[in-house]
Length: 137
Image (cartoon, rainbow, N blue to C red; front, side, top):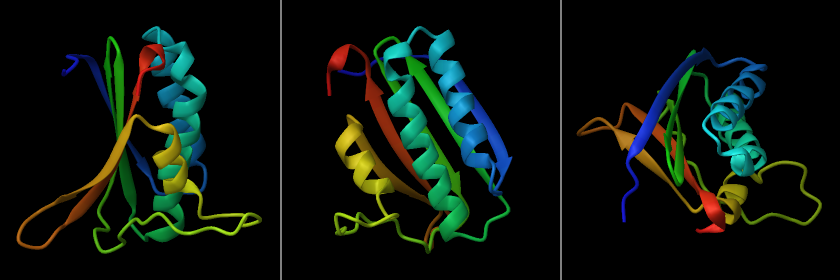
């Protein structure tokens, strides 16, 4: 069953150290205003991880965050122009201090994935995740 998107927002930001904070606060405010308060903390964490991955693992100048908000589903997509940096869930040691971003997406999101843009060779990629209201995954 597909939930219609009631609101869609797009934020473009420089790929700099404070963009993860800006992005997570942006998405948190959107979800709060849309009545999805129960999703805010999970969204903040996952947005922060996805945007931090762009900052730490690419040299792109800008990235964009699209937030689609429906009545029961939220989809956040972080797009960058570094398609050759393939995101992967790593096997982690219990005391590892980094590398948990995609593992957290895998654990906390109702769905997530990577979409590549451009053919025949990708020119950009989007890491996206969905959260659902009412505790449903």
